[in-house]
Image (cartoon, rainbow, N blue to C red; front, side):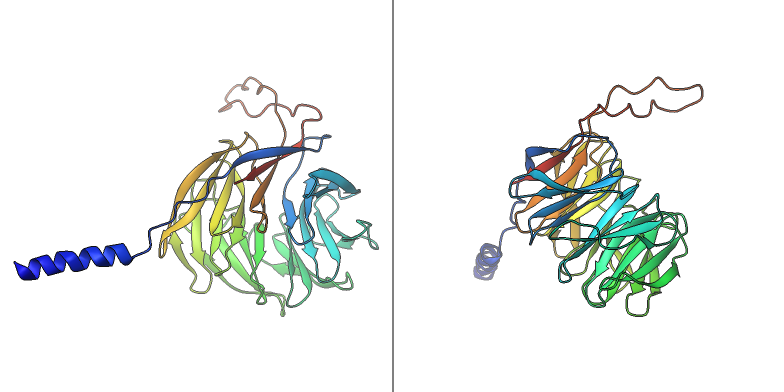
Length: 342
């Protein structure tokens, strides 16, 4: 009896000594930034250090001051722009202009275009700056390859790095590695930035059609997939760590303060994914946004999330043999940025 009482007391003391799992911070919509114009967009990029938000917007790229939430500049002639990369140490920015099969380079202080367009593969989509090598990589959707560019000079280093499938979003780890989702193979490829080649690849099954990708400070990757699943993976081992469920229609995912945020455009919400215990990742909250808000950027200093979206009219009636009704046309001048914060 004495032994049993001691064991119960010891267990209670140990439980009291363990830190309680902190509740996740509560995020909600805190504001909107009116952009206006055509309702066509893709990625956004947040430059936290310089308080800038870059917004892909059809044929141009908007620059927003996140201190005032006002549009302060427009970078023109970025036709079919998908993504934006910022080389803050070089004072330069880069846009992937999908319709021109090219990159626009600009000065991040003046927002003025620098030189001629830089040619890439076909339909450059994601674009990333790799700081160790000072190179920019575009991931070209239709030619299934990547282009490596010297960010200092704007010269193409390697015109085509074969990827073995259609690339989607990419991330860099700050150690000379670049990661990208391969949409039609349900894989992640790892690029050796210095040698401009694919060093390895690994499966992220059961993911179906990965699009958005984000990275944690511990170099854990989060991919969002069409089958309402996020894949948490360790690129060092090439292993899938977890498969938390998310909403439908995701295209982007961002990381902030210990959590990954999947932008679910079809459902009009965000799935917030956290590590609920060592090595266990789960969806811990759902944050309402707007239908169509499918891409996302995070300000990791201010703990704010930015999602571009437009309002849409009623969907058209389905055609014969068509499943579903599709999406209505964008309401004129309704393009905006949703701000989500604590």
